[in-house]
Amino acid sequence: KFLEEATRSDDIINAANNAKNKLQQYYPSSDGLVYVIATIIDPRHKLQYYIDNEFEVGSLAAHMFKKRKTSFTDELEAYLSEPPENFDMDVLAFWKIYVLIT
Image (cartoon, rainbow, N blue to C red; front, side, top):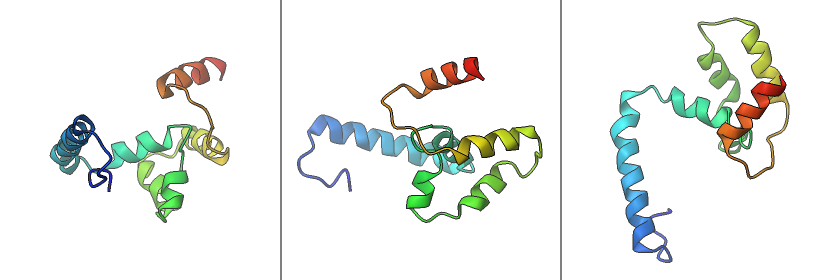
């Protein structure tokens, strides 16, 4: 959809095509889990993307932690039980602060 919009500049279309090509190159060599985890640990999104797109949310978490049953699971459940954050902050900066206060 993004690439089909006529209002985009050539530079943006080229950049989007390059990004798409990189994803198509590397995504098949992963199990896709890295993208799921990256989305979930982004405090602006958490599980909301998957809920909005009708993914089976319970199976995502089960897949992520199928080999580990630790207290980390409790921390993840606490994190996910809070609503997504509404801020315009660098995600890495958020986690640096979050780790320092917890």
